[in-house]
Image (tube, rainbow, N blue to C red; front, side, top):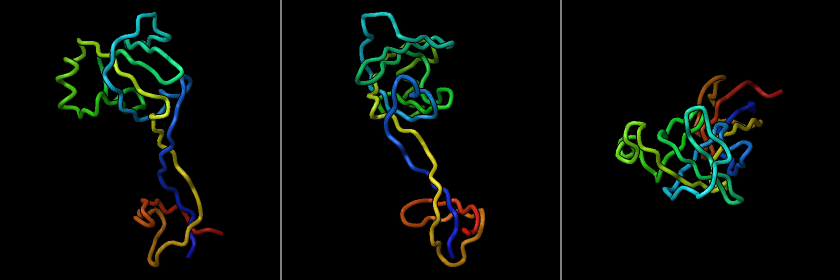
Length: 135
């Protein structure tokens, strides 16, 4: 039976106009650029744009608004050593092409027998959310 399904798909790439909207990124520790930042957020983070990517100078990482930005692949426990409880500012660089945006794709698929609406199935290497029977 064919069902309309929705599944997660990762879309790579960002630019200075959209990198801060629902992205995941792994920033690499770097030196602060010797110029004024292109943008300073309400929380005091500074952003320096280049043609290749962005340098972020901040005292907070991981959950950043709608984003998940990590620093040198660190998890929360390791990150606490790198950034001392929001007092120490650290610079990190990420290429525009390395930002990962979580998107959703809908399509019609022939699902395995026994699939029900609003169920989750792991099928064809993806986790599908079954929406409704296809017309």
